[in-house]
Length: 322
Length: 190
Image 1 (cartoon, rainbow over the protein chains, first blue to last red):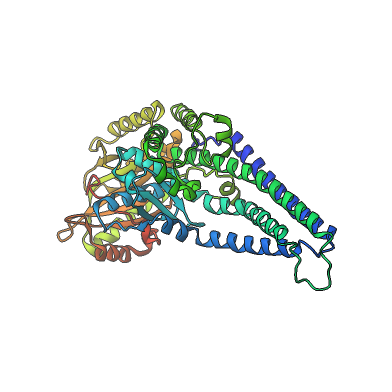
Image 2 (cartoon, each protein chain N blue to C red):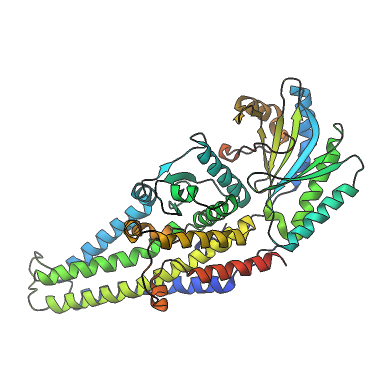
């Protein structure tokens, strides 16, 4: 029997599992807290707010789950290209063709976004809707073909891991919690969210209930935010690993990361902020907080630090030459 | 890839299927009978080289193995513009089975060394009076074949490709997903 050189990173898998379990736990606790609040208020006050927050949250969640590809494409003004369009598109397709054949996965669509930033991202919830987007900046950059291939392999790993779907589902509680905070805040401003619900006198109990709803929302939002960012960083590491193993060239990915992150810092901040909503699926995050408060910065970041990513890649490189 | 692997982001490198390759000699007979296409005696294995010493060692072993093997065969190594390595074996035109055996030896050496996931495709070429070159490409990860007929100026003869597929029919397991029939321009032996 042929031996395998694939060594899964058990530590990473364990940390990712734990993070997702915690997120699930937060979700359950959130629902339990909401039910409890409703009972305390005898289903009167606050129930309207919770109902609308959940309804709108579900609508937003479903919307971003099913339209993520279209939203991301139009935000980035990306255009899907075919190999016949121009030599550059043909080249891009050629690289992707070979990578998907190596990985044995369906080929995603390929799109180019007009941007001077050096970046690439993948979007779409499943193999049919997934799109791999690269910026014109990346194509025009000083990245050589091996480095470009490494970047595309990283993005294809995001597609294979269904990271868009996973992260959209993970962000779901965060969305509801955020809406709840906002609604409770307005509810308090305008004197009780249970208005118009016949037969209930909501003058007495309404304010404390709304306060409790708000506190629950804030706590859930903060905890889930940190957990989602943590999960995002783990998934970036997983995509780095899978991408490096796919091409067999971890060093190419390492040098691409260094080149791209070096150029990210050189670009004016104004352009970068415009791209911020897409950050979660980027190869390198476009927005970086200033200053050196390293730990806090890291805690909120969607991507692991460059050092962390390079360290993993050099470990893989060592593993492969054994 | 399983549901759990997806959720945990641990895609395993895809392992190749090497055995389907042996259905090529039968298909070659059908091609000659039906379309006058005969093997050129050239075949190649395409793989993505891995950085580091381990892969280099195995690659060297494979080359030595092939050079030692059959006296008539010659082996060439080349790298294409996508960074993929091609090991090209040349045999006498009438010794198609020996060619397929050699190609299989390359595959199994790489797979035994733990580099099976690096295998991209194998290509054997055919020719006739009217057709300059036909390549039959084997996709390791799918275990399927597809035809590739290049025309001048990076154009493909899709009509002829479809004809070849229909002619050979069930002798080969053809790739049903046409988006995976990627072009291999400038592949050695074409």
